[in-house]
Length: 352
Ligand SMILES: NC(=O)c1ccc[n+]([C@@H]2O[C@H](COP(=O)([O-])OP(=O)(O)OC[C@H]3O[C@@H](n4cnc5c(N)ncnc54)[C@H](OP(=O)(O)O)[C@@H]3O)[C@@H](O)[C@H]2O)c1
Image (cartoon, rainbow, N blue to C red):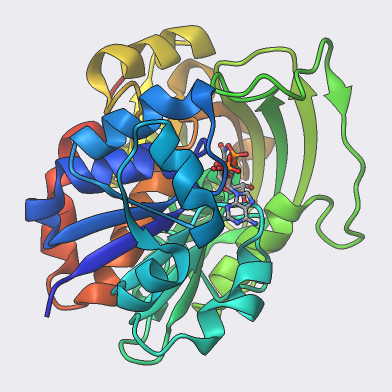
């Protein structure tokens, strides 16, 4: 039986994911990559043509095929056919929950489905390197890849607020300073810092809520609270963090602990544009796949060793992409997923 990965959506997340799967498909144990695009667009002709030249096959609704073909694209499958023949479907649209109700839960063929961070309730929350042990082969068919900032919060908790899989923190607070919009997006640019509401009484914003539920899959309940604002930059999200610990620590121990985690990058740099630029030269099409980039000069130990404070950067959408690939190949074949994902190791940096 062929292993087929089908990606729905060609936006900020879908486009690089289709590219990653086509470029590394042999290493990832995949025979065919298909993708669904909803809207035929002249402005996106080059993008679709390039993804197809790299080996991906286009699927769309029957009533859109002629318009795609008029743009010069070969349509290989209908949208329904592509979903039915897929081994794994990765939803990269803001309509993952809706698509689950309308299509995914009625499909017998695919072994599993993934959706992105905005689709709360889609399935078991997952972040690579955080809760791999919570995934149950044969049982977990629906996974929600947590958002990029939630990945960052999750790895901070793992490295600053835990030792040997046990929480060593009383409480952690985060301020997620989000980039205005992605460099691929033209809408929703923020001209000035714009602060966000605390919609969630217990957690503040969805970032802390999601990271709490992510850790709940491991039967852990970290006390966390987050705030968010948008900055007028397109480079990267930045995060301020404050951990209140149960026992005192020192800076040397904290840095050693951070260095032990292969998904953490440390940097002496303090400017997001320098980190972003490093990604442009050494990452996968500009993307750093590490889960966080911690600015070591900003690390401070306060309250006689019982608080850790600092800043870090969220490497764009790189961490969500890595977890999307890891989750998809786990659904295809849980026994070989850890070894297959190593092909992307060269884009996961420990020093920037
Ligand atoms: N941007 C990030 O950094 C980031 C990071 C983590 C998670 N996420 C999450 O990932 C998801 C996708 O975000 P994005 O930034 O990639 O969005 P995007 O750039 O706006 O792209 C959305 C894509 O989904 C397609 N689409 C929208 N509604 C659809 C539907 N009902 N059926 C089929 N296709 C549909 C669009 O197709 P057409 O253009 O062809 O119509 C487009 O290709 C969201 O849930 C978002 O919250 C985003």
